[in-house]
Image 1 (cartoon, rainbow, N blue to C red):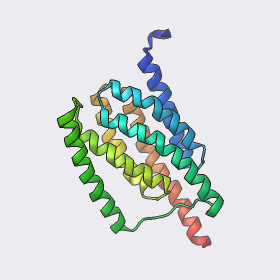
Image 2 (image 1 turned 180 degrees about the vertical axis):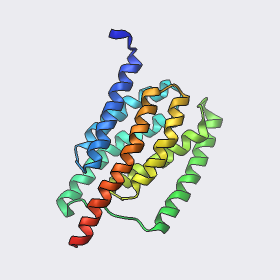
Image 3 (image 1 turned 30 degrees about the horizontal axis):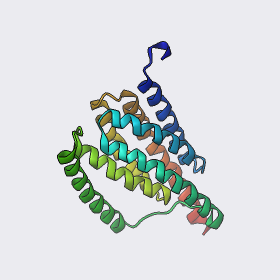
Length: 196
């Protein structure tokens, strides 16, 4: 590659750029966010397999599939009811957290026993909670940004540990954007509450 960049580094830059554009457009509630998320996710799958973070590679494969669903779901909701931001009750969040924790323990144990995955339990927790966070964003649940803040901070360490420095930096940016996303979606939710 030119300028001494390896193929993996170029792909990491392309993937992180697509994923960053996804989050920026998601905060602004733009349906086009899903296209950038799909592209960034597909590229990321290869990078995580190469880094032996198999749960993360499954996560990004899932992101690509959810990107298609998110695009279709947001389009449908926009036509039906303008795709508003909603909130979950605390009991619903508690059930979701308990279910995700159980699934993460199972996935972590499977990855520990059946693969040479690095940090299998930690990787499994960030992966399963990312599945949940993505579902919450597709459903436009306000609190999704709180989940993402925690996931992004934890992922910064995981990626740094595996030598994926660009992804680690991206998670730092995502952490800041999670706060901005929470404030932006909260404003949108409050405006909707006043007009209904």
